[in-house]
Amino acid sequence: MYTGGERQTERSRGWERAGARESMLVLTVSHTVVEHYRNLWNFVRVLHEKEEDGTSICNPTTCPKMSAGKNHSYTWLNRNHEPVELPAYEYMTLMQRWMSGKMDDPALFPTDPDTVSFAIHPEYTSNAAQQGGDEWLGARSGFPKQLGGTCQLIFRQIFRVYAHLYWDHFVEPFYHLNLEKQLNSCFSHFILTATTLEMLQPSELEPMQYLIDLWAADGTFPPESRPYSYANVERGRYIQSLGTAV
Image (cartoon, rainbow, N blue to C red; front, side, top):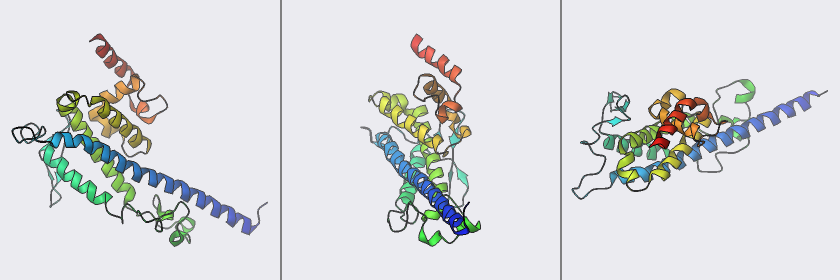
């Protein structure tokens, strides 16, 4: 039997454990989103390098819009918050600027150890969790309310860039520069991370679904992984057989 004080102590320990788990999750999300952003932009730099004629591989002529195959294209919100189509080069440039601004903002991505903690943050102990107040992932450890949503937006934008790279630039330049293995490694790791952390939903993966099917079939995604559960493994095996036949 617990006394009243013992029950309160046990509740406090439970809140502390929950706060620590939340903090670890938020730290994982915020750390991995920065890691994947850096990985991606190593590939984007290749597209932005100038050719002898002064143009880049990805330019308004070759890529007049931000697309991923014939059935998927992405728009950017202008100053009036209206969706507009932009050349892929311009879209990625604006996106990079937006992402950098978010990740360099200490109010959004805290770097001061005095403002975040694995334990329940002192400013929040009295009570959000206990009294059902305004609560969000990481709140009890001092993480800002908008961090989770911003990370999800960044993951979504990173996926869009990867999708464009695969559909429009996989052969030229990445295959011709022998960079396809590095690209596949970074993208498969990104998909595993984004789906495990629920930063991307199955419907958002559609432009790259065939590749996800293939990677589920060839063992890149293990059966217990979330992207494997999103895959059509039989179709992946069929795609794999086509590659073997060739």
